[in-house]
Image 1: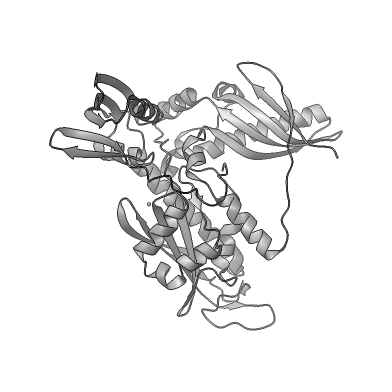
Image 2: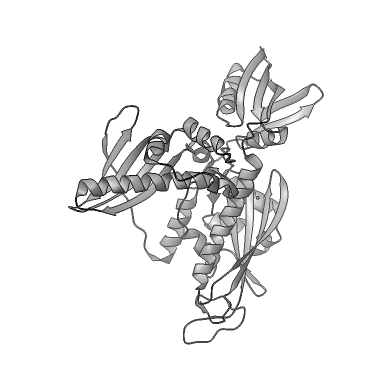
Length: 419
């Protein structure tokens, strides 16, 4: 058996390393659905530690007169694609057009290194998968120089509960839930808002049914979120209107089996989003108009894109780094031991919104700290919540405490990279 090679290059060291990787394959509906859901699971540990300036899984495929030339073309295309993906991840959509396509020289300055896996080479063709690591400081300067607003704060994972409504019936865990299948088949992508699609195992099924999710029942949904190591839940209910058919058999208006729309105006998917979490309950509605002849599966795939973009853009708008608004907050950190402060300091300095940290006083019981941060106090509090730190105003001023739940059990599955 020949294992695919992994090549790694870093601009600072200019070296190559050789390794190996293996993959697995799933077959059948159950395996496809479970495999997709496992891949979409992003545990809190991975979500909080991964580098948001690294773009993974960039597929390249180029042909030329020689393998060397094809490789050069493919790598250039892959680096441009990685740049575009990072822009989508960090920058507000309304600002992305402010930045022109970077030149090769600019990309060279922006990229700190890249890794090549699954490399396949022929005489005139080159294929591979890239992982591109961007220089965070250089990237920030580029965006700021062009007036592009962006965010870097990583949200806690959000459990997304997909409900499929057909007439008066709402389904959640059944195989007839094509909305859930659409989420399982959605390609994996790294985002500032990591999504978790519940596995739908016996524990999930026994703890939450479609009626409780549609209510929405806060107790049942909170329990589901806690099982996956988070506090945030979005219930996404989709209903489809429009005449659909299964080929030769006619369909009724409002029917939602897979097939093609037979009207000149395509079907419409209406998605109701209900978010429950630390900020309370929020509701939003998205409407996706399908094209004439578009299949239901394609319409639902487009609807997943719309939901993801709404969650991402809302998060980026609320957490954009405001370099023109720099503030200082004096906070008190209660301590049980000195190690508590060391651990909390490590969390604080990793937050992009915090640009300075000054220890004013330290005793066995407390630390008094000056926090220099970007934006407003509400933004600071939201960013702190993502790493389980709670900011509150009390009689003696602002206090910062850990609000992490007790570690009495692990979330199901293994963490994967990638309003």
